[in-house]
Length: 373
Image 1: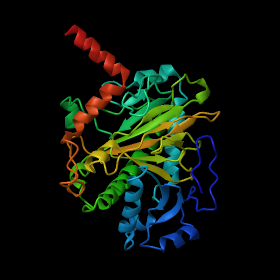
Image 2: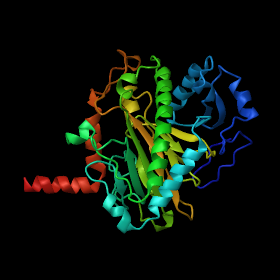
Image 3: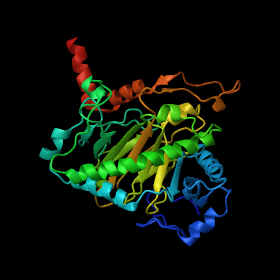
Image 4: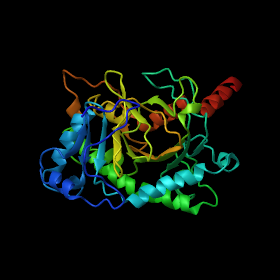
């Protein structure tokens, strides 16, 4: 079946669906028993839907089969869909509900929670222009609002007490305890899943399963970004819900939204819409994986256009190495014929530069500081 072009609906054939209970259907079990063949439940042109249940349960040969399928798509589109991931649907629903409840509040409630030097808290409409895109000259701010949640630190954490500029406290909305409970529960479930996917990537790169433990094990960089997109009919020319970009972390795990909107740029420049299967996650590679793999697994440009006549919510979970990690190409991706394309990079430096480039309130503050200096 050809991939649906943008604007065309996706009509899947009869395939296993993963709904509220996430119980494995007989159809999925039959696929799982074909191991060690790559566990592809369904492939829509170049992006597979992969059953990761056998891998998570430790089935013989499952890791290697999954890694083979992951490597194939990471060398192509960098996008895949995972099913049987073990995340309870109630946690996903709770995070979506929390996002909707917060964004429904008025500006007087939300603006005091606005992000500052770090991406923690509320990012209002008009606050982000993606200036790093290599496929589009993005000149307009994203038509969306966001709320960022990071690893939840206590006020007496030594890094907070010391005033470390790379760490901050989450900015929890007052009077919304259910918001904090739902989002932290979701983050707590997503982090182990993300770690498992990082381990599969290591195998896909012919590395030991725990290779990335040094950079990810102690305290990886985890960010949950809640996003609301209004209908696109109010957009200006060259404005998007989220402008064309690559993710700058290692992996992103995106729970399927109720409404479509994500579009992926293929190698020939065509914008394609991934399949939407309830209860699954869309997973895509980020810039740091591109650096580790010496561009073997390069990240793919993608964007969001909400053509639905309704509000759309998204809850991407971004996973990256610790801030003290030094990213350099791994040995299995470097040779005399293919030397390292990147110098070592401290991940904290990368984050600082990115936060200054794409967020206007920090750019303006830096310009004022430079003028006064």
